[in-house]
Length: 558
Image (cartoon, rainbow, N blue to C red; front, top):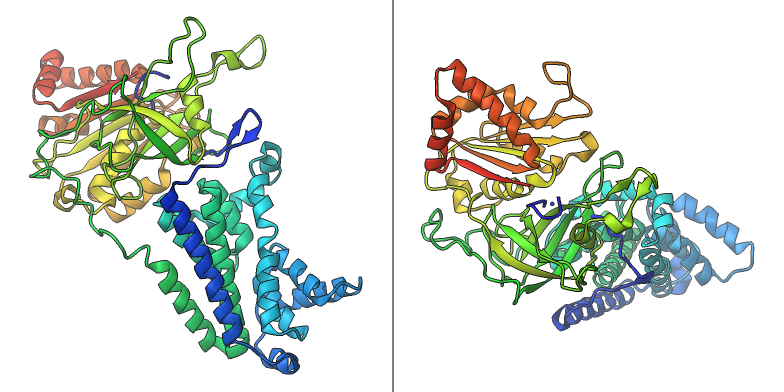
């Protein structure tokens, strides 16, 4: 499983017990600093613009409309005051609490009679105080397990942040933290940033900006009602939204001329002796707790220097040497799990889908670390900033023939063999590409995994299915949850067999069929097609030869 095209975030981040922080390049550092300075400037402007005389603060607070969590905040404030704590300290503590946070602290501060020039800085600092240690504590495996219910909720809340460029993640996270709605805020934002694998410095800068923005919005609502809140919200939208309205809106800048011409497909740009060094943007576990094993989606920055096409593979050379002879580890191939534009659609990234290879020892009754997959474990353990030595791109067997936009594609996968098809589907349906604009055929995806928790990219498939019901079909084979027509386990070949006549007819009419994943599925597939051929009086060997000669038969199994 290590050597084939096993290919699409867990963030374990442990190496010799030392937490490794990602190294940001000079440009990224300057961006973080500039955005942080801008946030501080906005905070200073807000505190001066909304300056209220100290004597009038209580009157203003009393007249202000109540905001979410105000009653709870007042109770906590009175409780903390009973210990003789200064009001500023009480305010900072309230703002540090989850759920209450700054959005509950600002109204309480005004209710306490403090001037806004004191309230805002105290609330911002209080809200940020637990976030820095939280981002580091979440790296602890025991704490992660303990907090798993909270992390799961945070993951759902922050799912909209997505796997995009760092700049867009920064803007999304700042807006997520900055808009004072239920379920958002610095605590949830920190957990979301952790789950997305954002670089720590970038995450902190973004959360700080969001906290400052939330303070300004809540202050505006408290001081000037809904109109003030809307004005502050509009300013936040302009500040964060520029990241989404800059750059190209279409994915058409990495195309051949014409787009379907395969004469310029890049191959072996980087070889074993001179590999390319990519940098990991994010690594995320993408299967549920009951999945058989761990599968990760890994996004790698190649700076636009490592172009590839959908259906190709990257070689990965894991660090270190072999124990038996001291030579460097050999290169492992992984199908690329993104379109040529990458998940961020900039053309600067590519993604891999990797299952962590482990060996269960029946004598030890545990995983034997001496027999674990070298490369898959390396990739699944990467964190933002990790360097990956890469070769390729390799292969032309799995390319999409796009000259005829009415061509049907039948895609059959087991497990991480889904990787190339994610690139296909994104190119045809998700991204604004010339191929997608022209496509009028039907793409039919079959995926075989053990159970529902092991499904890969299901949310993406369901979205495409809803948006393109006539052009995209989806069928799953869940071996531990479904039965085939004979009462046995439902394997991928059994699911394909349910549509054998329809598939045969599609192939006769020019459809292309793809197989990627474990080679064990192929005998069942071939037997199924052989049976259909016999029932129709067609010679099976000649039928397959015909598909191969017309390049309709694409196989990449391991």
